[in-house]
Length: 313
Length: 250
Image (tube, rainbow over all chains, first blue to last red; front, side, top):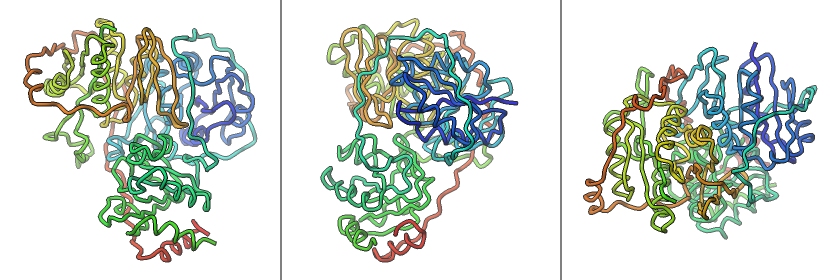
């Protein structure tokens, strides 16, 4: 029976929800065990969160000062050293996992699968190519370690279960000093996190300016939604890059996605395909976003948003 | 630094909508417009700007692909690359095999910096740069939106989920470009003419001694299920009541 190792993503304070989505993917493989490894300068709090996830059979902690903040070049040799006894190594398809896992795979000398969106069999997976315009089914031959990133939007995070044992491990791998963290400039706000929010309000070029985004922030606050944006809005400097939704930004699956002034380039649509309900509001009735919207309304977002707010209870 | 290597991939042009073959054996690429992968074009632009600022002497463009990939190298030369290398093969390489081939070239050329796109817009793998960095045992700075060279180190701003991360890497290093690193220049006609005199070195992939046999088996291609088009509403009242019916707004 197979053993799975998941690389837990965290910021030192909490476990990223993408990890619970990886566990859901791992469970679909139906393995003998699912273990999560947490690497960091302080791991106990995050490890407890990981151990609580349903289906997890064990959590490994590797505690080293060099492991926080996470740098792919530093983590990769440690994970490669740990990977030996596992048949699968999974990581979330977030910027953390995408940066790290190919480096691990190369150290292990095995290919990597990116953005696994469904598990068709223990060694058979489906993933998107061409910005989601085609899907491929890929089989990993027997005897080859499966190294894959997991597309979070395709898997519902597992809940909490009985709790699994936590085991500190020592890893002997030479850690490079050629890569150094300087700073993280975060656009962090009190709004719900874009990748985990139930509701998302999103703006595009049609919003017109950074100042005008205040309208979306206010509306989002009323309905406890996260705020996203199209690439055009980020490129134009209306909002920071961490708000970008789409192929090269965040791929999300909220219950409700409300797109205001977003025309709907294919790369943007790739990022929201898994949303429950898509609402589009755009002045241009021919905007491509209406092709995939569940509910479309042609009109001026600056009039429509206040009108929606008035009707909220 | 003496030299920057830029790795380019020939891909179906960004503006072409691809189709899956009816028998599910692949994607139709015959007869489609081919271009430099847009992320790689950004990487090339960055290399050219560094050279123009006097921070590098030479920019070498490399691709792995069929004979026709010379077209993309000609474009790279017209943009301003000094010379180009085609590692010729008709095979499709997995990212790890591509990284192994690039590692061979990098070992020979000894660049101070390798620049390439964070992903190719055909297979969307986002792996090759990281794998090359691992094989070369050098730093990687992925998803770069800003790159500054200061002597023996590079300071790179990376677009990450949490915002913008700044890291410092010792050179030589591998840097993969994100969309906002720069806006590539347009190629001017005189540059196209001048590029015809520049040299493209062609290497048979077999001469590099790298095993390029794919490990993973791609068994089927299919068109994703399309989200069906919903309905249009005429007013905010209708919109709000539709959302209430679905339990999404109170």
